Image 1 (cartoon, rainbow, N blue to C red):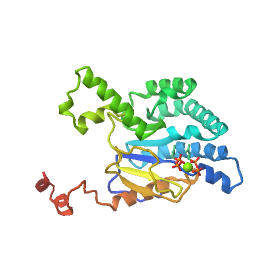
Image 2 (spheres, helix red, strand yellow):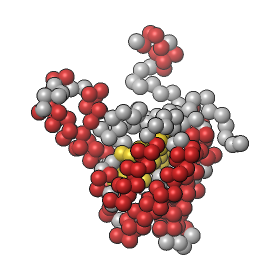
Image 3 (cartoon, rainbow, N blue to C red):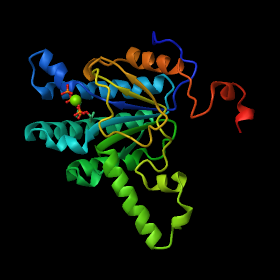
Image 4 (tube, rainbow, N blue to C red):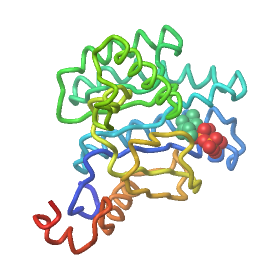
Length: 250
Ligand code: IPE
Ligand code: IPE
Ligand code: MG
């Protein structure tokens, strides 16, 4: 059905910094919340577009730890939209076999949202073909502090040996413990920054920055980002020649 080019390699895990809702609204003389409302529609379409294109995991940066500092009515509006979205999508997730997960300090989210998240995650936990990860009250630095604290507690309890410390061990204390790292990180709205998103996990991700504002982001834009990803050579510190003769690199 799609006019998108068939990508040769589909990134397993795509993570998106959904940005530009406010500017989208401003350009139309609408309140910022209207931009967020349209942004939710894009969340919906992108969730299914990504799966159609063969992506297995989609992480969406929905609310950062810093976003609490926005005007109170905007924060309230965003929470209301999230609640509406979760209520409406549960049925669709079950019908279309989408597993929902979260990363971030969700325990600090409003209790009504926590409850909806728990129900949705519980009811979709058996689906393993496609996972939607919502980053909610997420911040990479907060994640690092939480992981360091949990790791230190495990060391103190004798469950981890300090001298055995490695990234493989430590990363099990991150919110993303059992998730693969993102292969492709997309940011919409023309900004080229990370804004505290998956700083460690994106160590070797490919980045695509698109000027498209999030409410306008389409399946074709996602396919274009994947096509761009396909033109890159991911070297992970090796040389191009080593990659072409993979056995020699081992
Ligand atoms: C992204 O759009 C949505 C959230 C951060 C929740 P913005 O609200 O940041 O939109 P701009 O950057 O003001 O255009
Ligand atoms: C990043 O967007 C956070 C989310 C997309 C949820 P922001 O709009 O909050 O980032 P900055 O403030 O422009 O860096
Ligand atoms: Mg923004």
